[in-house]
Amino acid sequence: MNKITIYYDAICPSCRRDQQWLNHWVDKNKIEWCDINENKDALLHAGINPKEALTSLHIQLADGTIVNDIDAYIALLKLSPWLRVIAWVMHFKMIKHYLHIIYQKSVHERLKKSNRLP
Image (cartoon, rainbow, N blue to C red):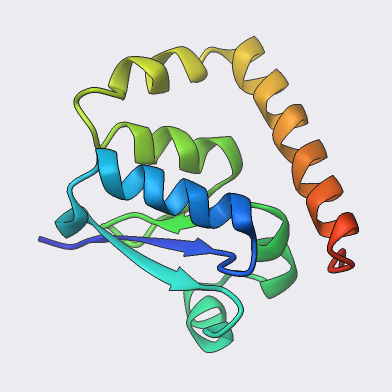
C-alpha cells in the first residue's frame, strides 16, 4: 500500500499540533511526514516550489497527484471514517472558499510573526 506524503513545516507550532492531531485520527500506516525545511530535494522532486510549500499545505496522494490548500485537508480528513463527514461539508463551494480565505490569512500572519514570510 502506498502512503500519502504530507509536506509540512516542522518549525510551525500549529503545523506540529496538526501533525499530532492527524496521527491520532488517521492510521499511521497511511501517511508519511516530510519536513519542508529539511527536505528541499524531496519537494523539488515532487514538483513543489519550496516557497509555495511554506504558504500552503501540500500532500502527494498514493497515485502521485499533488494536492494543496483546503483540498489537501479534505483528502486527509477522508482517510478517517470518523472525519469523512467534515471533509464532505468542507467540499461545498462557499464553505471551501471561506476556509481558503481564513487559512491563507492565518498562514500569512503566522509567517509574518515568525519573520519567515517569503
